[in-house]
Length: 533
Image 1 (cartoon, rainbow, N blue to C red):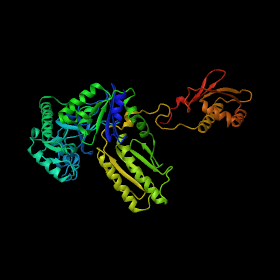
Image 2: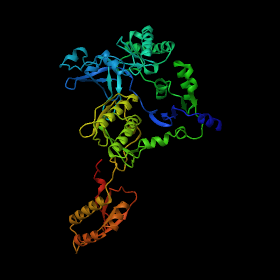
Image 3: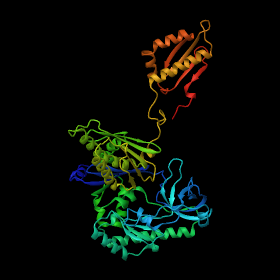
Image 4: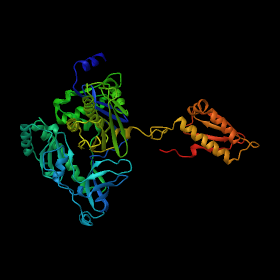
């Protein structure tokens, strides 16, 4: 045990990937200088379909929506835009890691009946899932197919070849283009060099091509011989995807706590680059791996609604169904001498944390960031450029707009699956997802209102008084006993009744019952009235 710890403490690790593999759940954390930068989770019960290729059958065409619905064998039909049904080489290259090419043409508007000629209802189509089913919506698909390898991305349906725009060195780009030109293309399909290909040897690309060729043969066999709907290709599990996509030169090591997964990772790595096998390490410590590497604590902090910044400022992150709202606040910050510079410092620090939070939480769709108001146009532009730069490391596609006149920055982030929050949390059965419950004062007013209603309905009088028992939550009873007792005494005199209050710890703070003490007849129950969710 001590020998193991000595090995792990021997030198400062710059970047490492920590894998917690369990029977029901696999978690992967990317750490940089000990700080959590990326987090992924996958459950054994999940059927991850993003990236999967299906042979589907067109169910119906909706000219009004400019979209079609396709049966791919799932519970809900897949949704596809008309312009995604016709593969477009430039659009596909643009999507693959920002490869250098022209931008796709403006999306065409299809006239009624035009698509029915090419894609009649009942016909088959091969599509790939770009976004999983979220909430009540089915999966989103496209006919622009792409199959990632370690160093290359194969793009069926095109013969174009390119190099990722993220590889900036001119000499390296030229070398990679020459390597790419000499490589055979599986099925004459297009190929793109991924960022992981920077510095890789030609033999590594050849090995990748052979693996992609085998995948393509299986896809072709399914297209020709399997009836629709059927799955033709499925992306590997989280651990194998992590090794394939994230084990780059800047990663010092991958640490995993499962012997079985350790052996499997080394086997997978052998296919790509045998030299990197030494970077795979097995964790055998007594403490859970995420606790040993301080991932668990950082996860708890990362998913809080309030996220503190080192300067004393903080973020408030609210995730709704339609958008994610991020509010930046100065908090306890005491920095620059003048207010404008102090505000700029907090906003600048918030930029990196906002980018990190979007990755960790895996939120997508519309994001609105309310930075602290800056009067200086120079500072506003600096914050805008800083956020764009911080988002470059995000694998999901993003689009950022400059600060608006209201001081808000709007952006979009590609949504492929449910956020980590939606996947790991469920609505609180107590507050039913609101995050708040009615105050004791509100409940006191509500209870008094219904007591008066019951008294009037039962026509209580001095000659025929009504004895009632009210069962409530203890916190509400404290309010009634300590602050509203005088009001309740006056109610007894006014409505000719006698009230007995009983506390029940099992009762929801918003629930109460009113019962006739003499007959045990239930006169009112708030539980019978659904609470607002």
